Image (cartoon, rainbow over all chains, first blue to last red; front, side):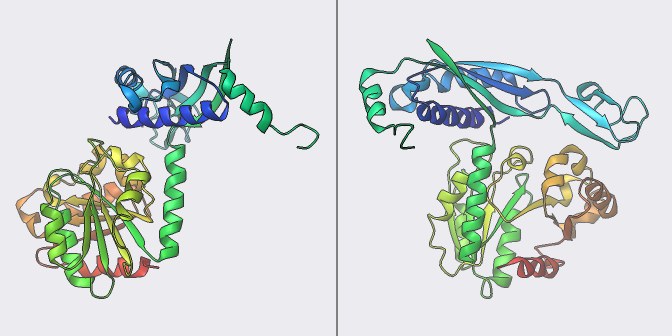
Length: 140
Length: 216
């Protein structure tokens, strides 16, 4: 569906967080994707590969070549009528236990950035600067 | 050495924040932003043209066009005396808050009371992204059928109002207004529904009264 635009948004968020943490490079990005989020993992990975390897300034070097790891989240629906849960993908809106349509999605439409794994070594010119700028714990 | 930084952040979170900021800023300026969504060919431009002719003198209107094909619509809108600007979505299937902001502030909004965002003609993707609009309004035209709410439930459940256009053609199609309304109300009990014909003007008054009530 809109895989490419979400890829750009994930990249932007990850680059921001990596810079805040003074990480020189992102190795992997792990996302959690609900099975009824409407986002297709294989399309997402294709878009990702393209987006992190664009020429020149189009891709920030901090995320260049980073790997995308997708953790699926099962889709589960809760029935208000009989208070049981069931597999959303198999049965959709109507509860297979009691036939009620008074149901809601309990989980499965998530699209979360879980974590990024980054290189921890700081280039020397940056680490010098951080030492000077970081206030001492006593002053802070 | 490598380390892990945990984010646990929703992908739409940044957009949601931008959208909220835009919504507040526009309110302070006294501009009501309406996000108009529909399938292609549902009569958005005809509806807007009629709305502009009817109320632009009283409530000056600006239109942000997100269709990428041509500037035909923009020319029509401007001929009626409203401001308009065309934005390019760069192939994206929806408008997000950042693109909406850029487009809106590319226009001179002084004196504007209502800004319409003519979103990309698509009933799926635009439903999932907050544009910063104060009201989300959907257009469904009679030829599309009264069962459309069953096919695109998210769009119908997140809108504040639904305009059913081309009501003057209903005798030529198997479109039952009551069936349509009952499908919609099941998904969204609080939604306002306005059956109109922008061609004959029938029902336009109720839609325009709704706008007048919502302006800041």
